[in-house]
Image (cartoon, rainbow, N blue to C red; front, side, top):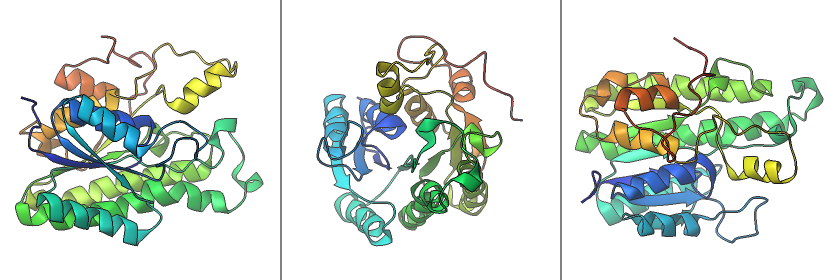
Length: 275
């Protein structure tokens, strides 16, 4: 029996990266997870990973994975995804907004005036507007049932500079979504929380290491570390006390008493104190 047996979750951006790790952890806790993302065929994206492969992981870990192709730039696709969840399950317990557009941040900091204007849309689109739209449709299911949890995977870039002006703008807006949506959903028993990872061993990071980039992985988080925080929040009867606020992945691990997959506490010595 998993701690989330019978619970229904939707995770965006779950083909790879942190979204994949969140879906895996929810599956390991017994949840049924709708794994959403754009990539359905291996090799069709620059990085490895598909919604089908993540859904298979979820099922192998003890949950039930359901792969759904969904482009967060298309409101109709998002609405269709949540309509399917309502029709098939009759409820929704957890939404994790983890999708993120990355037009060129892999190359390092770039002055905003030297990049094309569409970087703004790419950085504000899936990770910010997409999260707003997904949260809207999720709330339409959660409010009538008077329960649920929405987690936004944000970043320290909401308060500290990271590579591009529009990146920080997007993350700050995502945290504002957390704060204000949390305020309005409080009376309906639905906490909304932001999680700030630090340095995560994503597929992109590992590809860069393979290419010989001088990257020190000491202190890096696994892709599933944030997912452990999501599970902790989803099983915390006092989670409402955290609504509207951002927490680093490290803070949640300390508060709830878990470690990463290898038993370490990643990032403890380097994370800034934001409150």
